[in-house]
Image 1 (tube, rainbow, N blue to C red):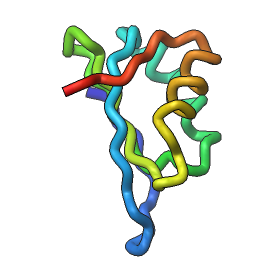
Image 2 (image 1 turned 60 degrees about the vertical axis):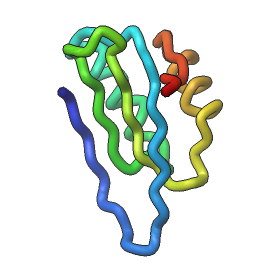
Image 3 (image 1 turned 60 degrees about the horizontal axis):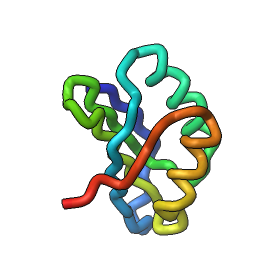
Length: 85
């Protein structure tokens, strides 16, 4: 599992979003990291390369919406969809 973290302020509410992706290599994870570093609402994220759905979990401020994550990653060539319960 790959991780990335940013300092979280105590007063900052956290919103977890979970997605199914096509991200399956460490090179893709590095590309994803570069994309997410530039987004100010990204707090921390993980991607499970061993899971069949390549589950991407992202913690963000409440300002970051599901559609924004979808648009951002799709714009950079990743296949992504919300992971439903």
